[in-house]
Structure formats: C-alpha cells, structure tokens
Image (cartoon, rainbow, N blue to C red):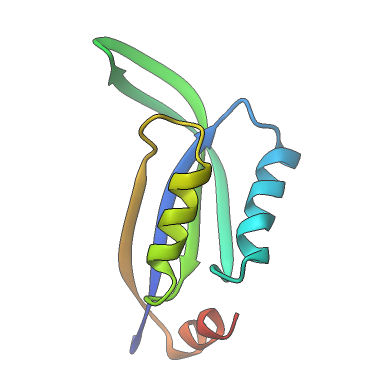
Length: 105
C-alpha cells in the first residue's frame, strides 16, 4: 500500500427505501466530491434523551480525497435530517491504482 484515500461515514434513516438512499448516494457522486458510495442496512442501538433506542439505518461510506473530505462533511451536515448526525472520517491506506481512480473521479 502506497497511497491514501479518505472514508467519510454517516448513517441515514432506515425508513428511506432503496430508491431514496440511491438518489441521495447518486447526488453525492454527481457533486464530484466522492468517487464511490457504499451503503448497507444496519441496526443501531444507542441512548438518546435517556432512552435506549434500536432502529434500522443505512450505513453510508463515501470514498474521497483529502482535498474534498471537508466539503463532503459540510454537505452531509447541511443536508442531514438528524439533529446530531454520525459523521466519521479517516484516512485509509490504498493501492496507488485505487487512490489514483478516487482522485480522478
């Protein structure tokens, strides 16, 4: 591994159907801020306002560059329906070829 890509992760409501989550993901691609979006259905268990919640959500991972990661985070914050959205970001080692593709997109 010789290069780096950035992964930005968030969750969206499991009440969204596949077409809606697909539309949201496509809008992220269309901005050219991300090269790829991975989505999967998960169950999240957490405490919110002194109650334990267990809900269905979509886990969304967005693959981007160092130059675009803050713009991706800002876009998520501005469009996210949650009061406090989960937004994680980390650098991931990548092959030079994959990193070059992410940077090219």
